[in-house]
Image 1 (cartoon, rainbow, N blue to C red):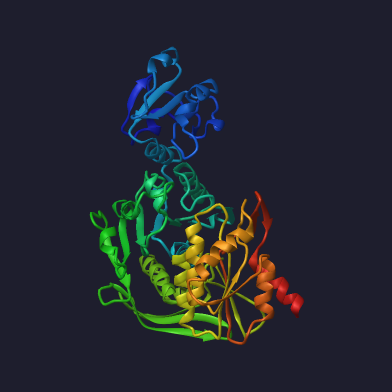
Image 2: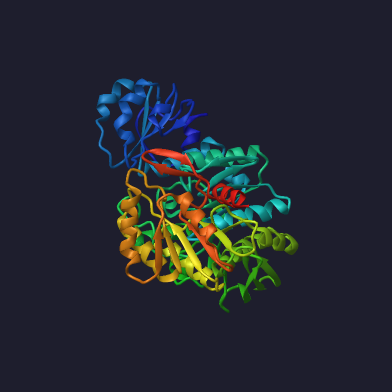
Length: 495
């Protein structure tokens, strides 16, 4: 395509050459440059594309896009004036997003795009929405923490929200696969790094907000985190908001979209009323009445009041697609998301095993207090903490488990390059802040086996931290470890 078409929606200065030229590929990884490539210089956490300009020109790049704040000696490149074009933009990440959209023919304009942001609930809700859309005769793509689903193909995710080029490429592939809509998780990092620039979402959804992803490599403070989440509602046509969340009004301040609300309070346009927890033969769930913009009852196969919010989000989206109530009910009754409050079959109604991805104190507290409401005989947690990560997470998770669980079984998670015993000792610092019972079993399979072998009638056993992961990271090697298979093996050998 012509370079002028690639940059038609950009604001830029031409430092050298011109835009009336054919280009072959759009790249931001110097190793992927070929003859005729446009190379966009991205500043990453480990490398800066501006340091590879000489290399990419030698490798055949004919366009280089740089940021205004970067000083380069453009005179030293004047010898390439007839072959290389230099463009300067305010932000190369933003430029990459708009160029990627153009490069793939603006695929988002041909799809109904649904973006879900918030601290918790994004993953579960995307699967609920995709399931409903598919059942209703649509063909929905999905992009999120676990995977990207394009037609019959599932690709493991690297980032919750992929880089803009990968995102636009995925949209284009979805169109080729016959998709007419896409539901995706929109992370604060994805918004901050302009990964979802270059198009307008049809629907933007806000679940909730709590302090998370704050640190030197993520957001500098909570205000920055909130600001990034709020960006979605200046980039969508309809905003669907959890009005019960204390930051709801902050998130939509300065919004440019039409606003709809959901929640459990009278203020919500779509409401959940008469909420009741359900428990039957080791299966935990919740049922409620949908009121306001819709009127019917629903039962969900995922426990807890937070599941009510997730399902309300999904129902609020389904309403815009005119999805039949029977399809909504069927989806909610059978919903199952890998590693998100996932009830694992054991062949016994005496106890319940749940796998969940909770890997910080906030999500762990939410999980434990939720399951406590079902009044289990004992609430047992099996967990460790990741190696080469902040030790405070270990103290905090230990404290939460000691406070809310009847028994904490401390074990390995992904120890990475640390010794599992050292990580467990850190968790014990938090454990000892309360008087909860605990044992330590370093081998995670043995820890799970201990809980199953010693399960009492009415126990709920929570396998915490691994969630959808199917491996353990030990000394730089990822070993196969899928807790679903581990539980099945233990149960089958026991029987």
